[in-house]
Image (cartoon, rainbow, N blue to C red; front, top):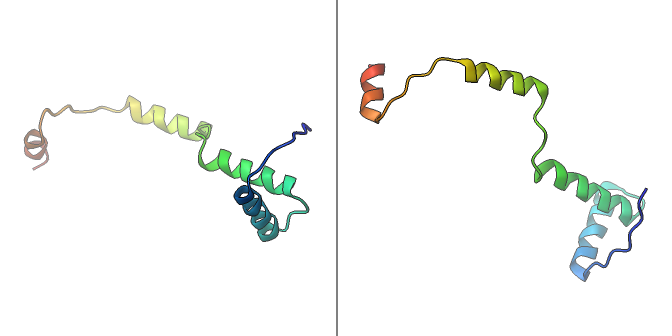
Length: 78
C-alpha cells in the first residue's frame, strides 16, 4: 500500500468528513479511497465488457443502406 501526505483545503476536508460519516468509514483514508473508486467508475472511461465487444462486432457485420437525405430514407421506408 502506498502512503501519501495530502494537503486538503477546508472544503475538501469537510467533504471527506461527510463521506466518512455517511458510509461509516473508520478514517478519512477509507473515505478518500471510496471517492477515488467512485471517480474511476463514473468519470474515467470504463473498459468494455467482452460480451459488449462481441455484440458490437455483430452489429458492424450487418448490412446497411446509405441515404444521402431524409427524403430518400422516407421514400425507402414508406
